Image 1 (tube, helix red, strand yellow):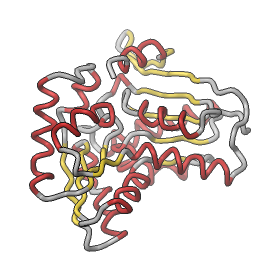
Image 2 (cartoon, one colour; image 1 turned 120 degrees about the horizontal axis):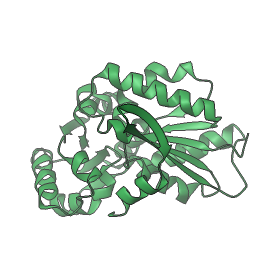
Image 3 (cartoon, rainbow, N blue to C red; image 1 turned 135 degrees about the horizontal axis):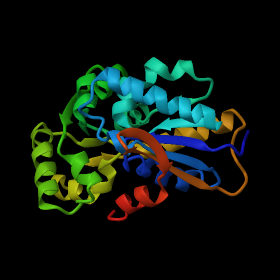
Length: 260
């Protein structure tokens, strides 16, 4: 049981930021990474669609015998996780709780910004958690529909991406935030661009750090920490002949991420 892999799911390459942090904190853990490239991005999908997609992928992970699943997608964490996690007999965690808790610990003026997908913003997931921690917290959530498509296309240095980032950051900076949450796992891939637009007086929160720490805590508590050599499997979805299929995604996923 200890040597079983961890499952990580995302709509695309954004979840690789969580994998990267997991490798730092838990280098001995094996991972199956699932990129749902056939249906990226999730941010404009309906809650019902997102729930159905995540239930399908979690069922796949259960069949593969993983010992824990990280839903490395803020949209899925916001809209699907609480509704479906009890259907599976394994620990399933998301990224929103760890991100919100980290931001709450860092903020001084209680003004926290969140860059996220349209679906995550509509869910008010970050705002609900942060105001539950402190009702006086002021949370400014900004939908960023242009970012994920550009990131998935590998256009990390494109002028269009920098212009979009500046556009989305403007109202948050005008509100006087002192802490910014990357409310989509894709956004740490453009950390340099975001920092160039927002400056160095803001504290930046990558929820992947807290998510990896929570994973370590759960595995230790359940006596599931691996002690062997780690191995990594990459699975991607695609459309072939008009049908949704799963393929060995190592080359495709890593090629998309190689521009980071």
